[in-house]
Image (tube, rainbow, N blue to C red):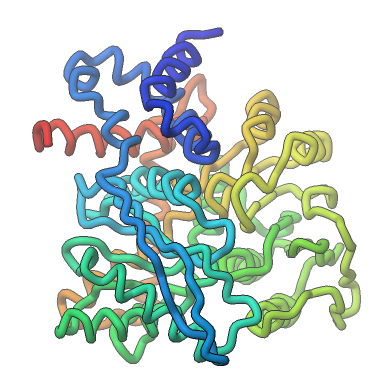
Length: 446
């Protein structure tokens, strides 16, 4: 066992018994700790300040009951949470997720990751995450509205434009943000940018919906340009059928790549010669309607039940569905088929043993905290637009997003280059850590 593993194991033990059942959180912490603890331990000031420990222990975890009424008059009760991880470089910032799997463990992992992702953008944004175990599937429009309003009644006292600015995440899109913003506005008695991802008619930003998926492709393009290459003609496999997956597919297809897969829990939509824009838009429409993607009408496309995207020999793999979706066996398939790049559209979509397989190969791996940071970056631009009471055009926002992803790539490459090869995961962890550590040291013990 090398020194990095020894330090990481000791650090995880120091976090205490209350974290031992939080597997997703511990997995995320281990990924960062293994890269940055040698830096912290070799610097007495950082070590004495316990920088990483202060980031791994959230500032606070808000937990509350959400009581709401169904269309039939029945009373429903859900749990809601907001994990405010760190505001050392700016107001808390991170999405809200509505899904039955939401738990304190999931939100702590996402909030911790968000701190490093936001630090990499260079914007003054802290890290947080929140949500509820509410399942919107099968619920009517009015029931979703009532739930969102009830959720915000509990969360509203704890957020605000200079305090904590939530955004959307899984099952929280412009519709849900609209309902929650309306509830917050009534509670606060003022009009301010307390949430991002808002509609354009009431303070939202152009390109927010597209940003995370687009930024993933912009980051890959920066990776390829590093070696004088581009996306044209590359076989790109994408998992998921949601916002990130489909917008990454659209941007990759626009850049000349052959997008060969999108997927859902029942199987994979496969197009050997690449999907057309119309087919990708069809997937978006099916997702919005709550329907599956098992019956594509386009020639050359088929739905392969129970198949995963990584079995179709891509040159570039983009896991965009959820955490821990890409396993050790799937990673071996990618390595064996000659995959060149795995870039994360979702947060922590690779299991630990999948990462070990990739790290032992020639596959270049880009972590989500760097590769999909465009979503929060455009949220930061929305906050700026709200503060200045102005709007940017879609082209202005897109230009800013391209530039920002190039800057993130440069920061990560600078920290991660060893022996002429870029370790993107290590570079992202170290670059994010340095900015957070400088702010923590500068502000003293609080």
